[in-house]
Length: 504
Image 1: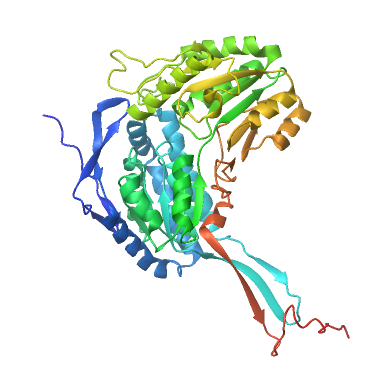
Image 2 (image 1 turned 90 degrees about the vertical axis):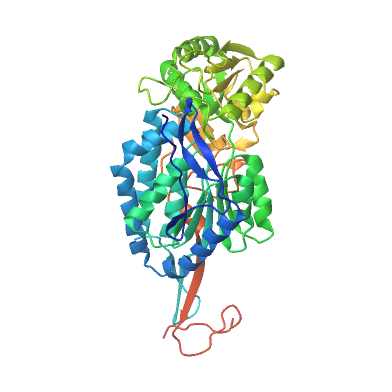
């Protein structure tokens, strides 16, 4: 007799509660659809209202807790993640499919962000500055904003929620988090950890369900002060419009169509390693994934031969198998999108060098597996060059000059991550300056951001805010300028121009 799946609940005001709808949805392993991880609450606006009310009430108390004390709880949560890392990684692999070495890294990013932001609780620096008037003190300090709605994606189910939650909490905000419907368990684990380490009731709230019935009401709720979203550009645009009418603060981290430039003088094996990892790590399901590879003509054929050979040798399968190098697409819909873009690439006249098919057979029959796919001789006019696919599909483009390579790199609606492989330091620095992205790598792939530096992009990738690093505090806090006049008399700044301080 099959084991009955666990039913997971929402977390509102410190209690695990059933949704108002009394309905649930299944969470299924994309590598094996017979593996049901559990059933989660299919919530609606009523649950959102309860969670926001709890967060609003808790904010009145939480904002007054000294920042170092708030940070101590964030530190404890980071240590809890560290203690449970292997279990959490296994859950994440079963939930979204990427291989165990990657989900371990996903959890490690959560640990790193918690430890980094815990330190900010004793910094969170403002500034003091001289006043233009005598006997007057001037400073600027950070203050919390209020209730923050965190809407997170499925591809980094632990890292990205912690990128948002840790700085929000350290700054003194309360949060309502809505995880992707494909990965609610990993965020449930994170919230369970927050409960175990002792976050006060209402500070952290968790509501599962669809974007339409949970995400939209969160964005439109009058008591939500800030929305932080990671996902597609189309959805991000809708969120931005929904929040605009109430002038909510919005942080958007959206799409990418990232390119690696491989120059003639590149170390060939290193470049192949980097492009392979950038294109097929996480099954290409990263906003920073290498989707375009721009190769100088002098090494074009040699590079392609080496890359295709390596791609064909990649072992695809269930990510719980430590020998597997690439897992499945996250669901049937994403796999269908991948296959549609492969058909588009063929129709447009790109040359399919390897892959292009859904993997079938005993090892793959119950999952959403695709062969690592490489197109060559791709032209900038083609859709596979311009549009984000979010799958293990790489477009390779030849170019002649360095300047042409930079132009091809920038010929994109997005601007998240870029990379160059070269031994010429002058070209490396010119590329750092001229490539229009928020992240840039030299002799490394387009993936691999570190938590203590700002993460985000330009153009249609985002709206200017950054995650990671101390810069994340700028989204989750307000600046307040404070003036203390101890002169004992009225001083009219910017008006009393005749008042000149004299030195006796």
